[in-house]
Figure 1 (tube, rainbow over the protein chains, first blue to last red):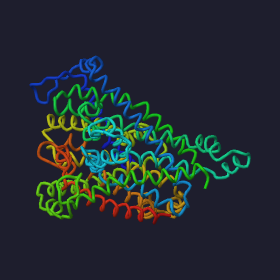
Figure 2 (figure 1 turned 45 degrees about the vertical axis):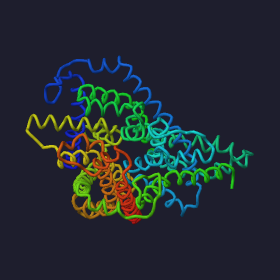
Figure 3 (figure 1 turned 180 degrees about the horizontal axis):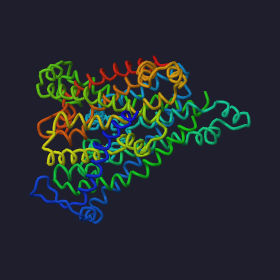
Figure 4 (figure 1 turned 90 degrees about the vertical axis):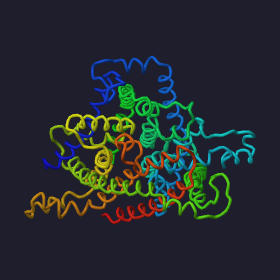
Amino acid sequence: MRFVIGLPFLWLGVFFLLPCLLVLAISLGTYAPDSVPPVELGLSFKSFALLFSDDLYLAAWISSLRIAATSTLVALLLGYPMAYAIARAAPNRRPLLLMLVVLPFWTSFLIRIYAWMGLLADNGLIERFLRWSGLASNPGTILGTEWAVHLGIVYAYLPFMVLPLYATLEKLDDSLLEAAADLGARPFAAFLTVTLPLSLPGIVAGCLLVLIPAVGEFVIPDLLGGTETLMIGKVLWDEFFTNGDWPLASAVAVCLLVLLVGPIALFQRNQARSLERR
Amino acid sequence: MAGPARFAFGMLAFGYAFLYLPIALVIFYSFNESRLVTVWSGFSLKWWHGLFVNEAMLEAAWLSLRIALVSATGAALLGLAAGYALARAPRFPGRTLFGSLVVAPMVMPEVVMGISMLLLFVGSERLFGGPDRGFLTIAIAHTTFSVAFVAIVVQARLADFDRSLEEAAMDLGATPWTTFRTVTLPLIAPSVGSGWLLAFTLSLDDLILTQFVAGAQSQTLPMRVYSSVRLGVDPQINVLATLVVMIAACALILSGWLTRRKV
């Protein structure tokens, strides 16, 4: 047993915990463009100070949070009815319906985002559809806007929203709804007062599973967003690969982690509680 | 059908269309004669042929495949151990830390994990002169990232099943190791198998972590795809997407079959 615990413990300690501490150490160093690697170790808060004083970084933080939050909300509004419908379907059909939600997740993330590039491109199908249907007379190119980024996030993370929602909705006791109906509640009222509150753990889990990765997202804003779409994952990437400013990129990483510790802790507490209830 | 349910089924249909229409179009346009994905100009297999003679792409695919095999196997072994420890050892020093270390990579932003692992490898290069960045560093990074997924499946499976089977084996004189090998392992094997598949897929698909730790020499398939896609739409990528979707569908059916065999 000691070996069974020790091996993964050691592995994760060396390859996960230690690197996290290294990021913290590097974020406190100073940028030294002439040395390899371009860092001078020390105890300076210069990178953090820059992060909080420069308007560009501040704007990137705010727009990351805003884009992630609105995308999560849209994913919830789409994912909830989907999960609800699957949970209400005939039991022998549910595995197939659920598999159809999960299947895209098993294909390549990159390729799914790529799929939207053609659709949203200049004179692409979406633009032509909008013009043809009269929804917008001159929609312009959607690729390269924040609309495209929102769309990409909802598309990529929808399965993460549907799965936990389905897990709570599936366990819902039908007799509760029947009781509500017997007491005179219309279907919609019964939904609002019975189903919705009982599915709250699923809502919390689903929203966090979308929100947490969306905040630090890189591929979606890079491929679907334009130059004016600022997201913090992209800032980190550019600081690291383009500018070679390792301490600043590390400081962004540290801030991102600090920002996400709250939601992550909330997620784990939520999971632990629903595990207990089983 | 009641009002909310009818609305929900409508949304479900819309959701499926939303999920599958882009993929269907990508597959459709892989047979397009034109280079543009906005115009259909006739059926052609030239992009299919182009992909199969694209040396750089094939080489990248081969590298990705090897990395995925190694890292999925590593993650399955470590995840099996971690999941078993979490489910069967209620108390040991550092259990809380261990528990959070196991699941943290799952919720860690990938850019953060990428930069932290690269810093580790740069540090070890300075101190010990290695490992060289490439196959090994990518495999280590992918393994670390995937352990969580296997551990969670294994832990959940172990929490579900009847412990009296293990106790009976022990009462009959089996050593803990024999018990594990003859009772526990066969029962959780499907979970380990589907965890392995998940780790394999995650490794094949990973871009961000790989980009950080790959070094200058190695190019995995997602790295190739990314650098090609950044320049715009490329019909060869549509062909690749078609292949990936087909393989994923097969893998999912296989994994569904593996997990359904439990009980």
